[in-house]
Length: 272
Image (tube, rainbow, N blue to C red; front, side, top):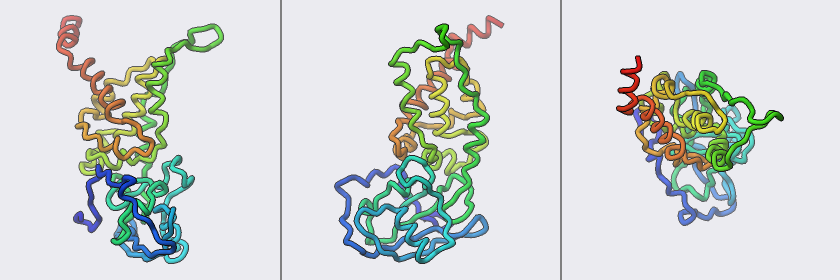
């Protein structure tokens, strides 16, 4: 348990596999320990509610909201794992509440539900994630080369297109941002853009017709050097994007080639 009373857990834990699923008796009771309050003060409050087979954490939160805590703040939209709105921490793990099944959780003890820790708390389970949108606004946009054909189209290799398609699956749930220790524990929001935006940068830098160079920003203002490749972001991604291996490491390699390659450094010295 952390100093503010919130539950801590190994955020890389993958114990929610099929073998660990627990059958739920129809209309059984479970206790949910939910973070209530705002930036001026908050604490866990326990709620007992009925649960049944097939329910997800968001279902239980909605039942509690409807029957016991009408003023509880919770952000959600699609309830299908595609909008990224209902991000939270369940038993200390960054997850989408709508995709976290109750029969994956040990219901013989309270299920903790709390807001993402990497962002300022607004109320209850809702955090202010606007910093992420400000980061995106500052990044160099997609800048395509002139069309290859008179009809205004481009010619690309299918392999090059497939390489960046994975990055387009991002739903901006910001769970990868929440789990990243640089933001979560060290609060370096002014110096580090986080895994989500390294994925975005990779989708642009590796695009076969993009002409912009973002390597200097990645090295300096974006803080890619802070990432120490723990792969926590990859493990929590609900879209299973291989963030570390396919986005961050290749970008790091490009930065090293551009700015730290000894031969290139010598060339720049003698070409001044």
